[in-house]
Length: 391
Length: 171
Image (cartoon, rainbow over all chains, first blue to last red):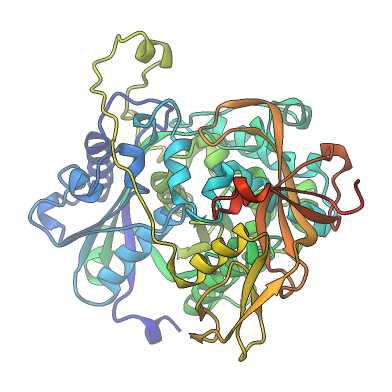
């Protein structure tokens, strides 16, 4: 099917990332450089070999620097190159890789650097105040809206429609923070119990402290190459075989929040391109977007990896554990590794790359995984980006 | 992270060192202010709120009665056709109990917030608002609620002209 959509097959040939932390000393530009340099070095290419650069980063308001793409470009290897920034809220990280894909798949370029950076600590006392500026000024802002409100409303709706208890959802946080113990860059690796989650501070019921990912600084990067270039320089290319993205209406109070239909649409687009008919059977490892524990459940339903409302069940059965039948977030996810928004999404694509290469070390899922998926989600609970990769 | 990588870039700063001024930082505060025009649909909606009424727009193609109102239908992608008053009563679609203010600071007394599907609008046409005169544990999905309006003199043509929604059966 792929040939119907693209002129060239595109490989990931290198990946890199920085530590994810609440506060990092490096500037955004320096973080972008560190991740980019690691990705380049691991691919065996130098900046001279790179034809173009695509960068992802979330709202300018975090950094207080408008034209953030331009601010970061020198660190992202964009000097005197075709360079652009993409931004689709929380979906940015995976979408940046998709944007890199079409730069090469179109036949326009042979190599592309994909870079994502976020430095949320610059906005103080809390980046939440910058988040407030995403809301409708007439309907939502006068009510004192906070970003966590809308996710609590979505989580509660999901729990209500399917009759899901909080302790089932907490299992995701336990799993992901536990997986992050094996990730050397993780911000919140922790061995916790369901009781810890249920006893943690209530932020916006039903969201408690341990249901939610932290604010973070960090960067991640990939090197993409066309098939001709990739085959010359590596024996282990990881192919991007499917991409998909979709957005729902911004009138978020007019949608039933219990199911992310837009994620399903994005996944179906990617599955079609990759020739995947039964994602549950054909995928070996999944990085689903988990800024909150319930979001992992929501997303594996949207990705059609189980029936609606069944994600808590397969989680409880251990299916999504790193050694389970369908490992989900073996990296530790946003809950464990951290959530520098755009960089967190791209970290998921990096993780699938390392998993499919067999380079994930202690995080490696067993059974020689060959097909993986990374997904991100964002804007006003309305955006899905999905990428399917094969080794 | 690849198992081949042994050195992980980035240097963590402790928040207490930041607060204590032990790390060089440059500070700046934006001084931007905004005044948004509300547009044809929302200008009428906000004026009607000042009158103590909620108004919607209807699309004759998909038959949806939409709140907040819009001059075009995003699904049919054509102009909407008609102004329709909807009721100031509705049903709780989902709700939450917030201990966080807009800047993420902690609230002692939680705010109850809900998406309320308004009576007279199409199914699932909700708005965000506060709940009042009800304890958190008494709120239920599907509960009927009614708007509590501010006194006419205090209304400014804003969504906050409705003070909050309260249970419909409450006194």
